[in-house]
Every structure is written in C-alpha cells, then in structure tokens.
Amino acid sequence: MTKSLLRALLAGGTALTLLAATSSASYADERGRSTAGDETAMKIRPGDVVAAAVGELGLTSFRDVFSGLRVEAGNRVTVYVTDTGRGTNLASSARGRISRAIGDQVEVQVKAGKYTRAQLEAARSTLWSSSGPKEFHSIEVTHTGSGLVVSVDDPQGSAKRYQQNQPKLAGAVAATDVTFVAGQRAKPASREDDSAPYKGGIPIEGYWDSDWRCTSAFGIRQNNKTYLVTAEHCFDVGDWVYDRNDDYLGSVSFENNYRDAAAIDTSAGSGVWIDDTQTRVYQGYAWSWNGQYVCQSGFTSDKRCTIEVTADNIEWDYDDGKGARRGVAGRIGAGVRAVCGGDSGGPLWAYNSSGVFQSRGIVSGGYTVLSESNPRCYENILWTETPGVLSDLGATLITN
Image (cartoon, rainbow, N blue to C red; front, side):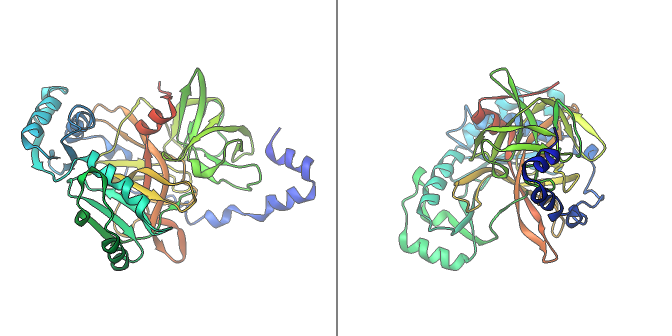
C-alpha cells in the first residue's frame, strides 16, 4: 500500500490537503540540469594514491607525529609531522605499500607541523565544552598542524571572551594557536521511483511529507541485515521512510549523531544514482584528504563534481541539541553552488586511479548562502566520511 493511499484512509480530507500543501515547484531552480564538472575528470591521480597510503599510516602507526597532508598540483604531496625524521620514515613506508610505477610519479615533501592531528582533536573537544551556547559554528583542525580555526559570527568578540577565559586546552595546545574567523552556521542540506534493493542517491521522505526531504547515500550490512543509510538529522529512530513515489521503504532502526548517519531497515544494495539517468556500483570506500576532489549527487543538485576538499578534519554544530558532527568541508569555487537543501543524506563519491568507484561519505549540510533569492543553496558543502560511519555503526559497505 502506498503512503498516499494509507494517509487518505487514515486521515480523510486532511491527508489530501497536506498532500497538496507543498509543491515541488519551489525546487525547480535548485534542480537545474547543469552540473559542475564531470565525474570522468574525478579519477584519482597518482598523488591521491600516495596520499591515501600516507594518510592511513598517519592515522595509525605514525599517529604520534602525524599532523596532516595536502595533495598539491603536479603530483606532489606535502606531509606535515611534528618529527620530520619520522615523517621521512612515514613517506618511505607509504611508498612501500603502493606500486613503484605510481609512487615514482609523485614527489613527497615532509614539513614540520607544530601539533599532531590527535593533539588538536583533543584540544577541539576542550574548546567545544568551553564555548557559550550557539557561539561556535565549526572548529577545523588545520592540515598543517598549526592550530584550530573557529568559525563564529563575531570573531573579535569571541576572541576577546576567549582571551578573558583562557581555557586550558587538552593536547598541550597553546591558547594562542586558536584563530577565530567570521562564518555562518551550517544548515542541514535537506531519484524518483527506485526498487529493491534500494540504491544511494534516491529522494526519500517521511510519512507526512508531500515531497522529498532528503537523499539516500549507500547500503550497509550489519549482523546479516541490510540497511539504507541517510543523514541522521533527516529522521528520528522509528520514523517511516518512503521514496518519492510514496512507496514504503522501511523505518529508521538506529542512528549516529556524530557521523550524522541514520540506518533505514530495508532491502539495500551496492548501487548508487550519480545523476538522474546513470547509476554506478560501489566497489570500495576511502577517506578524503585536503586537495583531493569528489562528487556529490544529492537529489536536489543532481550531480556536482570538482568539489575540492578544503578541510579534511572539521566538526560543526547545527545548534539542534545533538552536539557536533564530524567530517569534511569542500567547495567548487567562489559563488558556485556545491549543495542545496534536500541533498542531505546523499552520496559523496570518487574514482581511484584504477577506475574503482569509491564511496566517500554522506552529505550533511552547507554554509555560505549563495543568494537571498535562493537561500537553500550553499557555496560550501559538509559531509561525514564513509570509513568513520562504517566503523561507528559496526557495519560493512555493500559492494559488488
């Protein structure tokens, strides 16, 4: 039984009134057919392969010295560490994990970072707890290891209050290594009739919605059951979820606020819509690093590519009482739409150098409104990362 029929039976004329109350016409401009870039240009470069190997080791064996990294133009990777000697060992160990044919194409430069990524993450936790209600929008861990960057409405006022309070930051991070910048609070960025097993990239809605609310990202498997993942801020546990054709998919079984992830109990597969007409199959997943490029295919935006990772370790607060979310920020360019309302929960993806299609994350939100006439679209996109989501949910990505 479809949602519209069930609602009519349960609520009579009221349900029919609600069905007509919201029209999809308001989304017409947001769902323009133009796309930014093409996914064929998103194949991961040799530098991305080296960066992935360096990053994996940096997060594990070299966690005590690893500050961050950036993929530069011209097949160069810059690695920041608190001990350059061990940083050289990190680079060498990473090269040993990849083919020489790829590694020889990439120059790896090791530079000194003031703090490790772990130190700054610990300091960030202290900083969140020290802020007044609604004051901090987001806190970025710089990839150079130089400190923390805090987005606020009033940088001068926040800096003054911070200097007066002088909170003792964890990780031995100096209070003077916190920078305040002007920014906007992130806003949740909230294909038509898919069939089981359901794919990422489809528009989904709640019981009383008259049109799509969010988008799905990918399918996971946990304890021999499959689930379709979307953004946590879109639904609550127990909510019934439907596709845009009003077909019932299932209910939300569990969520994770920090990763902004919700699992819908339904038949889910490895497929994903990358635009309104094309699908791909997930073959793996990976972290995203500064300087890399990804695509997102939330339903409102259809497909947006050449999104450059600008902050690969950032937390943000929607001021919804659920605490900070953690993930990545990116943008296509100044004044260019990267994400819109209704894209929330949608898929982030990229190809590696071998053409393997990788899941990169879940669209969470955006900031920097493009125009007053279109306040639901943003220049900057925020997403949570697939490896972190899978780890925290205790699940595996459904692949081919």
